[in-house]
Length: 462
Image 1 (cartoon, rainbow, N blue to C red):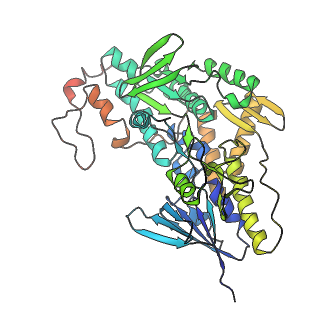
Image 2 (spheres, rainbow, N blue to C red):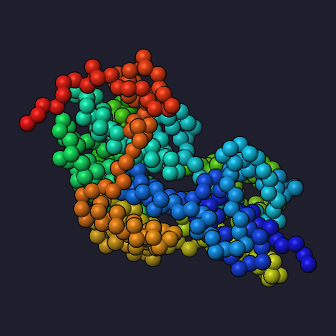
């Protein structure tokens, strides 16, 4: 009896998870290696950051999803090396333990990381949004900014705390800017005594000349109008050249300018993780400017038909970095493996079936394009709801998500506004504004107490 074919899948995002599930009935042993214990529904991360959803609703445990798939084992760890000659994957667990897993077929679906276009120093003061940790940090920064504005007396400092800059006018940036605007204009008014949250400025910045440029002129124009309608300031043709604790520096047709803002969010650009370049180097393959592997038409790495790169790891026909590309390429890789083992001819080259694009701008307003048809407003918004519910993993996740959407979109509340002390605001931003008593050291990772003498007089009682 021959040994069972060993398939190693790196990453439990859309590509890796759907590839693994597609191998459910195959005569293979699947080892899924992932750096976290959960599958992340990344398109809704911004709703975690703005207090609409909890992290559990968009990040179900991988083991729970695959509990009935007996041919799968799940290992926690980050894949760091692939030995293409010995056919092994080396991974590191969070504790530092290193282990190796042999493979006969390898599906690499490690997703993408945030790209700062060579300015990685921007990350400290303008975090991206690629993980649960990122979303929770941003939640703390966003809600914490209103809290800090409430206790500040200096008008300039208040304005700085109440200014939010989102860099990147793609779907993530547009959706984030729209939700911060709704937070300031619908959710928070009436909850503060010193400040009016409606005074908050939300500025969307991008070097391109249109919002949602991949959606086409009509939907791009409709999205821009709706952003203006809800109070988002849109600065296009604006390149970010500097980011620090107090704000950002930009270059425009009017010259270099400064935007003072305590909260900056980076939603522009993605790149493949370092693992992609390592695999390409080991296999003698090439990568594109974003670090993605230039794959064959069947998603395999040149010279190594046993290695598949899918989703954000592959560069093929200028495909967009969206969930559907990952899902379809992951399933395609699994199907190819099954056909090989069954002695069947190889499938046709991978062909992406574009099911459309959509982005929500505010409650009851979204833009969507599918099947050559374009939708805006309420119709587009309900389409957006339906599609995102369809792809959420787990029935209970869908039920609780509907409940939180009802609270946020029909009412004015945000069900998930809890933040910890460490999340409230960046330590550096507090120090820069003179609110941190640096003579008292931090204890167990908790920032030092705020000096009461900086807070001004107490709020007058009515």
